[in-house]
Image (tube, rainbow, N blue to C red; front, side, top):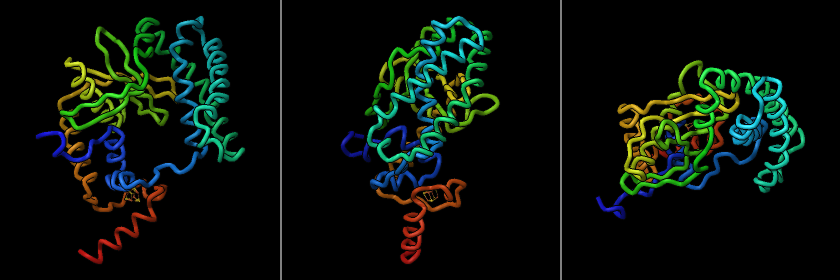
Amino acid sequence: MPADSRNPEISVSDLLLYINCPRRVYFVNRGFELFPEINASRLERMLLKELSLTYPEIVRECSLNADNLRKELETAFNQACEDLPLMFPREFACIEKETLEEGDARARAKIPEIAANLLKGLEEFGKDSMLAALTPVKTEPIISSERLNLKGSPSKLVYFENVTVPSIIKPGSCPIQGVWASDRIHATALALLLETESGKEVPFAFVEYVSFGLLRKVVIRSSDRREVLKICRRVEKIKAGFMPEKTEEKFCTECTFSEHCISESSLMSKFF
Ligand code: SF4
């Protein structure tokens, strides 16, 4: 099918929204803002993501014991606290002091656990292997594929076991083993994109659960690829104007679209 007869191009972030709730794709596509403000939890995630970008340097240069790692992480964290407002001036202009303090305290409290888990990973996998999996060969590259009608940006590309693979940074919770289903879809979508760009198979990807200092390898399965392609087609349909049914989602109570969602549902019920 020629590119210009297709639906609007979709992005990996649309797929992630769809996994949360298909209706969110509909609202974001119509210009509604998903996160109108920074709260303490979002600030905590932003700080931990920023901190994680310093892991390779810390692991490379620091002599490896828990105390050293913790101290280096604290220094890097303080720097992240100073840098973040310069990187996101518009968002930070309207944050309350209490929110800043709470976000800072919540993120800072994670440092001992991050240090302990990084150290455990280093002992288990070795410094060279950890460094290869953590060190970006590219940071946030934009990859797009006309064939998939998809674009996306992995947090980084890393070169591991002779392959360049995507790595995604996740500041949220971490499963006991493996990765969350939504992270598997995220990693697979980026692997598919990278394959269409490089022409080489991408057999695995990494997910960094940065609030815990844990790094997980995800093998990309055919069933994951099938699922990503299925979601892509559904998202294309929504972006072309189809409004999905409202379902009672666990996210509804905290959703920034709940007001619009209810009013659109009642409007639709008048017609159908
Ligand atoms: S209110 Fe619920 S159904 Fe509506 S967009 Fe938000 S999460 Fe989805």
